[in-house]
Length: 181
Image (cartoon, helix red, strand yellow):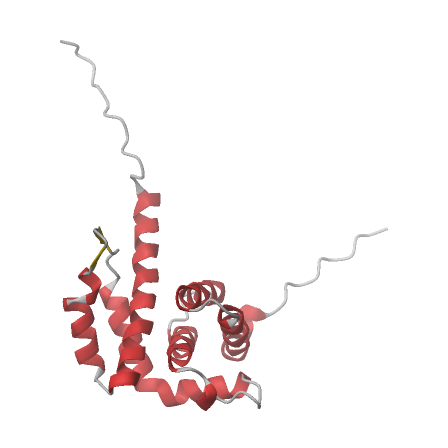
């Protein structure tokens, strides 16, 4: 027997990077689940608590064709659903302010409205999340549900809301000083 310590090979995907990637996937899944829950609430008239409980009990554990879906960050999903439900009117006003006159909030399809409300909630209430992350995440959710121009619309609408809510993050980079000749 050797006195030297034998190191085990590193597990693929192990370490801090894998943990942060797993956390990011859980947050992305939470956003997707929250939009689904918000849509369900709009269609059924159910309460946030009832829909959240249903998702926790059933939908977040679904087995689809033998593949267990990634478990969403339940805390984030619940926060999004409750926050959007509480502030829907305010978020609709923010959306109305940036939408084209010919396309009022009332004209938006229910799923798209649920998605935009969730994005606006994160821009307004979760200021520690960078604008580009919020917009990217909700464009990905839009891609999951829509095959048309909706992801581009989500990008434009959330960008305009972000500029109104967080102008300091959207300020242009200061110009580089002119070189001395």
